[in-house]
Image (tube, rainbow, N blue to C red):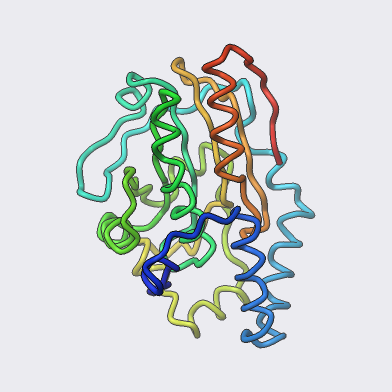
Length: 240
């Protein structure tokens, strides 16, 4: 359940691109994880891609559903309150047990000041419990709010949620990734990782999702998009 960050291991901050960090982690997986296990994960990703899951997420131009969730401290947070402060960046992740989610959140932590300077608020949304979110924020020294989405209710409204195939579920069980405990329900459902930028009125300006949990939007790309909005160069690409 504990994935050590570079900062924990060496006292340094990893300023590489997310793609570089992910490539390193894929290499480690290829080296140390049994081939049959890798094949099951690859097959699960391929099945999601075949169904074009990411193509059917809440799109650019749509209005996000209103939501109210608890943060890592158990405090209630509403989408209305968040949007009342300016634009909103939402990252949907699987949980603190996922090394790719950890790397993404640490990378987002590095650009968090730039996101704030661009007049936006950053939050993370995952199905893990409030307690797990607290542990994640504390362990990785994250400076933004981690919101718990029980039962993936909000992720489902963004069309991100899927149920793990039985073979993949069995792998996680053998590896002691106890999702019923981590998420507080027996559904074995997860969101595909996604990043959104939401305008003041709740409309989607930017949407990025990928069925492959080892590929995600670059934090620098999100920052550039926000900076372009501040400079008046508004565009509406949907990134997949």
